[in-house]
Length: 145
Image 1 (spheres, rainbow, N blue to C red):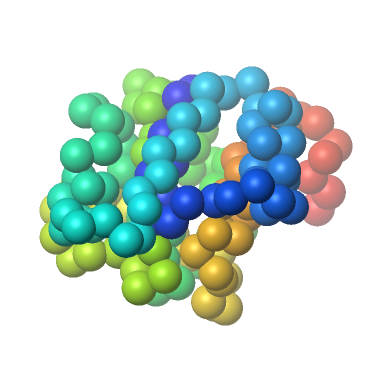
Image 2: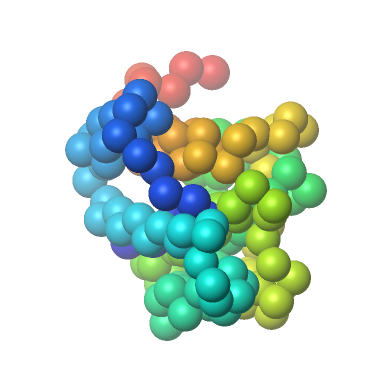
């Protein structure tokens, strides 16, 4: 499984970055994180579109998306893998959210619960959930029901 995360904002050194790196080390899947500085002079939607890998299944992370459990997330990823979609691309918007110009490129929108999370923290949440999914699919006891 190949994962690309396109994220608005730049995650600087510190605890959040340390957590992202820790989960990246734990994952056996290849993860590429592409950051988009929020102070860019180009249209942010266009910058996101330019970075979407060709052929990837695109998932937007947004509070208005489908609220799914970790087990449902694992089933979703496994289903994509089974049908040959081995490249998933996750979009995490900047502080103001994702541009509407991205809508035609997005295949699915999910939420990590009803609260609004800081966009830089969503990276940590996504990385942990990807690791949790990997462990669920492997039958490892990391995820306890």
